[in-house]
Length: 239
Image 1 (cartoon, rainbow, N blue to C red):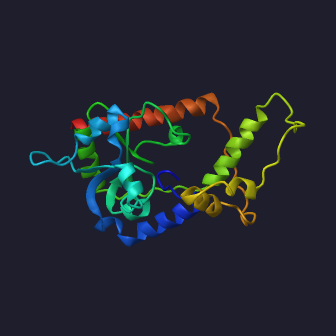
Image 2 (image 1 turned 90 degrees about the vertical axis):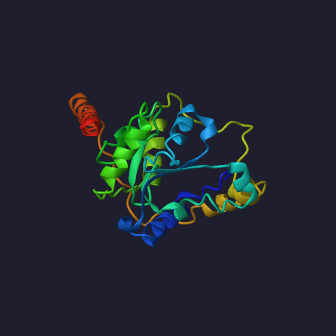
């Protein structure tokens, strides 16, 4: 809530609406990024790829001042309103996603396949890599999709629970928490988002089925496919 990220089902609806405002072929033909560059050296390096009087790497990069945004009502940081570029840094907006080679991974990142789910960007030569990706992407329409977020969370928590080596029990001094006790002490956007994310009725669809874990040969084949895709892109960049 401190940066005004809405509950997922509300944000998803806004993103779906945002993707329909401007068709992909009519969007700005540039790579787009907005964030706080001060928090990481790799972000400061990325900002160097911004357009200047002497060079255009086909990137439009914006430094985000979250303190100023909080004072002005987050008018310039609404994610659905940013679906105006053909290449982006998030898996949304129906735009090709550019992903700088990560040092750390999100919970879903390891399952993404280069060129299929995203376009890989070199971490040691970002500007040239971004320019090539944008030039390529503007000639090849890509579609990305993100579904079953809550289903995944359920499966993840359920899998963690199976690892417990003890049987949970309610201690004698435990205090039961209810929705009212959690919400009453909250204020502002924290309270607003808590109420908006409150699940009032069960889902009317079946839970998705998680695929079985990879066996060693399948895992090896997947890793090989990812590495081959990255090497293919690097060879295209050199040609």
